[in-house]
Amino acid sequence: MLRLAKPEAPWYYWRDSALYLHIYLQPRASKNEITGVHEDCLKVRLTAPPIEGRANLALLKYLAHCFKVAERQVTLVKGEQSRKKWIRIDSPRDLSLINT
Image (cartoon, rainbow, N blue to C red; front, side):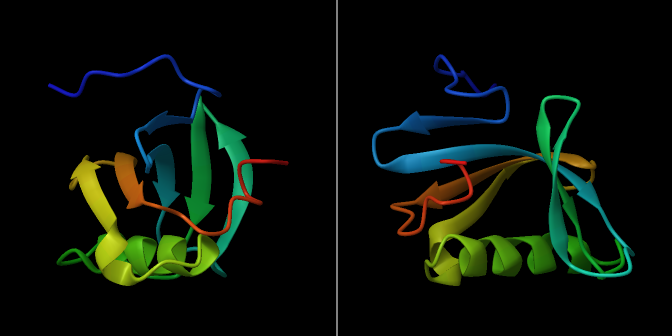
């Protein structure tokens, strides 16, 4: 079971140099975008369908782009078949998304 440290916001927390994000994923959207907070999660809309893990892969790639890290630094920790997911980002370089 995932143990949570005290969060900085309801949808993220830090553990050492890793950033953990609680994501609410909406697949098959009209465009890829982050729309804000939904049910204590960061809501991400993606055009990819939730078939054969395509939406999960698109989410990892999109978050790697947003935080300016390599795709191998973004990991799905929990929620492979759920809309709510925990994502780990190792040493994110761009923190503008969480500093707003």
